[in-house]
Length: 254
Image (cartoon, rainbow, N blue to C red):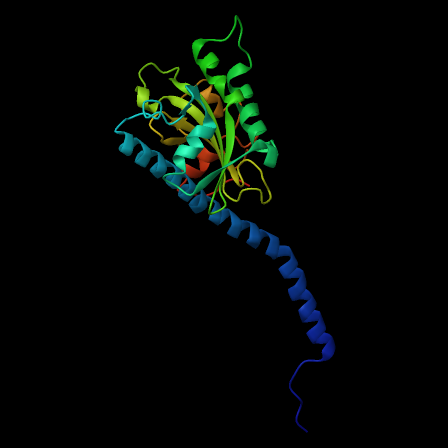
């Protein structure tokens, strides 16, 4: 008498149960890894789009700094809103009025500025810190057509603590880039990243080696005493942009 080949119902159910348990354990990690792999390329595209728009603005004005090109001027005032409107001629971006949006991203800019430039100062503000206080009053939000949110803070006068730094590479503002706008998680180092906006319209990631402003060494993604974003340590997430760009657009942190 031949023995029948096959599986019993109990064996099939047990096998399916094991597969289900394994899938439940591995699926979240797979989703997270897939999402992390997309962060770098999306962020690089957002940075490139912004820098190209600035370069086109400067080329048309035949100037080498945004201030000289009157990128911020309107009624003789420095304005991030005017800057957004000028950039709209070179990239698909639109100004978001604060009354139609929450203040979360402006608060991020404001808080970062406060931590970086105002803490630990004695005897009043130095010239650099005083100039960069402009971030508090002139922050604006802009949304691109591909759903990237830009939080822009402008100081106006290029400033630097490094006197050897050329004027066109000095800091003129801060830029927060959220690669998926208001979609979750809305966390620094995950979908939101900080950059130094240079006078020539280029961006330098906070935490990277090129980010040389007040307390810059404290925000180095490898060795910072105030913020880190490496394989083993992630503090506030301020320096994660530097980590991403100096690791071939890969997210090495958890």
